[in-house]
Image: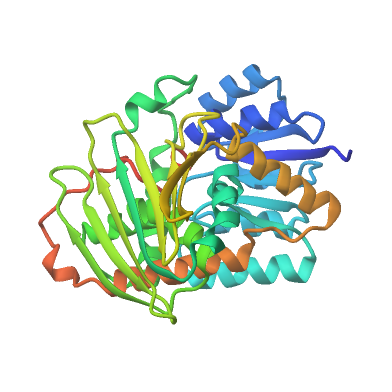
Length: 381
């Protein structure tokens, strides 16, 4: 089996919880050859822990190393390091969201397709065994009439503290200021010069949270025709609540609600698909817990009786399955299940979610603190 020399750009919480441990576990497929993060202290700590000598604070230096592939797990838009990696001849697995704007997406797609390199977006739910079981079971439900998606998101702190996570506070202030300014320009380009808190809601909640379920829905039922409704309302001094409605050409509607409920330590995420003959419910666990299964509830009629079956398809970890698929794409020439065009379509839909909302009604009604849950930063999968 071909063993890929891989570099990791961005070594925050999700890299430390999921990607780095599974890269090391998949040592027959991957060699972690280099690390990069803006924090010198983090590089010193992780370099020692993983026994990696090549640790950088500038991703351009990492890209000059002898590598076949790069994982881009950094905060903010992933387009600059991902594009630089493709231009340096590296295959790329990039965390969601792939980027902030459609222009960035088009640049990444063009670079991957012109070079023949793999560009894969890390939507781990699409590789989850429970999700795949539900995908296969769905046709038996008959014509779908209604989809309900609910995410009840608690505070992340109690989930993160069970892991070994190294945190530092040594990134130069001028670097953080530059990145903040660059992100502001990208948000203006993506959704216009809207005021806070909608700017943070777009980056932290919509691109950080809704993107997963929008992509999962597309894998289950195809492309929505339009976003018909969005409402955003205050959730206290924390993140807000969002409801949006997607319309499909065959009359199907999907109602999606994301709510931040910080104090109850019970992460809940369900995609419920209701058909004429049956129902399928996919119940995702917290993305910060390893090897927790994704139960699937299937409701059918058997001999005139309504029956319910609860299925645990596997204990295989979605993040690990995703890395296995990326390796197959690079070494066997497979097309990624979640490629750059897939990632672009999600961003397009999410911009429509924002456009369906009346921003002035939100102004001043909710406060979104920096570093809250939901997130485009490296601590959020």
